[in-house]
Structure formats: C-alpha cells, structure tokens
Length: 358
Image: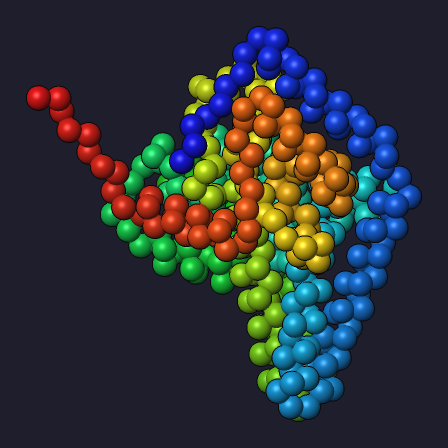
C-alpha cells in the first residue's frame, strides 16, 4: 500500500488553486452538449427497457430470453449509474428540467431517492473514507481497514461480500435506515419506523413492477418473464457493486480518522478525495456503462459537474498529481477488482500482533 502524501503551506495552496481553476474552466464549458447527452441516455434507457421486456414477454426460446435479459440489465445499469446517480448529484440541475432535477428524480432501484441523497451525497462525499463517519466504507458489513474492529464473524466477510454483491440494490436501500443503531438500542422505535416507511413504499413498488405486474402481463409466459427480471436485476447488482468497490476499496486506497480531517482546508479535502479513490481504464462504452464512475477520482473531486466531463479532466488531474507527488490510482478492471478482493480477504483475518521489543 502507498503512503499518504501530505502537502503544506504554499505548495498546498498552489495544489488547491490548480484544481479550483480546472473546475472553473470545465464549468464554463458545460451547456447544450451535456443536456443532449443526458436526454440521449434517457432515450436509450427507455428503448433498451422496452426491447428487453418485449423480448422476455413475446420472445420464444433461449436466445431471445438471453437477449431480453441483457437488454433489460443494460437499461437498469445505465439508468442507475449514468442517469440516476449523476442526476441526483445535481449535475443537471442547471437545465431546470423537473424530470432531471436532483431534488425530484426517483430511480429504478429499491433504494428510496431521499435516503440515498442523504447517505451518499452528504455522509459519503463530505466524509469520504473517514472511519466512523463515511458509512459507505464497508457498507456496515465489511472490515477494510486496521482502524475498524476485528471480530470472529469478520472471518466470514468474503461470504458477506458475495451476498452483498448479489443483492447490492438492497444493501444500498437499507443503508440510510441505520438498522444496526436500532438493534443496539441507539435509535428510538418511532424514528426507526419513520426511516422504514419510505424504504418499504419504494421497495414494494419495485417488487410489484418486476415480479407481479410484468409477469402477469405475460400470461402463460410469466415464468420466463419472472426469471428474466430476476436475472437482469442480478446482473445489475453484480456490475454496479464491482464498479463501486473498484472506485473505493482497492488496496491502494487510504483511510482517515476524524482527528486527521479536523479543520480540513479545501486543498486537504482534495488530497483526501484523490487518495481515497481509484480509477478504471477502458473504452468509451465501458465508461458509459459505469456512469463515468470509472473516473471515481474526478467524481470525488467534482461531484456536481456533469460526469461525461470527467474523461477530459482526468489527464489534467493526473498531471497535477504527478507534479505534486500525489499518487493517482488507476488501472484496468481486473487489476483493480483483484485489489478489492485482496483487501476483503486480508482484512477478514485478525490483525497481526506486534511483538514487544526484547
């Protein structure tokens, strides 16, 4: 694992100034091209979902079933990552389009939008990789740092991770409910019920749509549609989980304590975002299917800028990091995902005891 880079004084101020200038420069370029992109993506999602559900409902044989599953899974992935995630960050609020506004957008996933806006936009982005404050770090299930307590159950965390990956939308959905706090007696029952209400309402709508409504509309084809929807949701869960974990939990990612970030300046915040994130390298299609979260470093630096801008910002950010000696963690999918799995297995083991000096 690399060591943390710290900058001080004039060097830190210059580093901060360069990243601020890049943000201002890019923001000045945002306009009609970005609006066309997000509308085009919305049209693609609608077309892909119609094609997928049509193939599942009216197709015949395994080939059309597989094609339907892949089309529907693609629609769900792009809607969740390229549209839902980015819209709810406020990246397109400047368009003044109520259907693409961060305050009102509701995505195609069991997670309630308001819950996610709080747990992700506030708790995660404000406190990225600060142990005890960033509840996205390990999703309350995984030990991924020496600063987290090891328990005997931690030995099973590779299994917990596999279950989380297959059911990732549910892990995201219950994230802001804070079930652990309630079970430990740290949350009043009335508050817990209030937190559960929007989750149950949203999850009920999603379950009804995928596992009751569309199978019922297919009449005698209902088993084919039901299994197809299950498969599409599984693919979406596995893909989004892999991309999110590659951006946050590779072996090179740094963690922080609340004391380290006390009285943090903007330049120090930039340093934490860079060193607490990882990028993925790939084709333009690959970046689209990740919702541009393959540029996780740039997203953490500039979460409210339209995500397609990250690809043009990445070389500049990388060059700035190189000049200031800040590690810029990037690599191919399998390299980064291998690092994620290695971290999960490494921290599943009990910490090594330091030998007392002789």
